[in-house]
Each structure stands twice: as C-alpha cells, then as structure tokens.
Figure 1 (cartoon, rainbow, N blue to C red):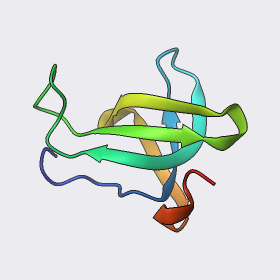
Figure 2 (figure 1 turned 45 degrees about the horizontal axis):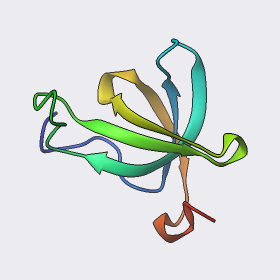
Figure 3 (figure 1 turned 30 degrees about the horizontal axis):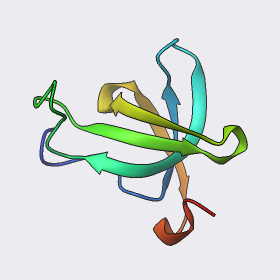
Length: 77
C-alpha cells in the first residue's frame, strides 16, 4: 500500500523479475511513495549479491514473500 510498505531495507525476499523469473535478493531501497512514473504503488530496489545486480523498481505486487533479513548496513558487502 502506498506510503505503508510491506517490506523494509534488509529483508531477504523472493520476487519475480521483469522476465517473470523467480529470484531471491535483499531489499536495498524502498520507494514507499512510488516512482516518478507510478505514484500509486510501492516499489523496491533489490540487490542480488551473487549476480552483482540491483533490480530496480520492482513493484510490491511482484514480491512473493519475506524469507529472512540481514542488517541493512551489510547489503552492499
């Protein structure tokens, strides 16, 4: 829900990427008020260390579940 995100920085989540493939990564950034192109949904930037990739603007509806959490200060380690 806009302004009230379900997930927070440091949450380890399963999500669907832009190709509808299931991935697992760490929430790095929460756009709780939406993005410049969609201010009606919460979006997340999710980091996958093993791929050295940041998946940007993943809509909350594409997140499947939280499966753990890490200290937000270690997301980029």
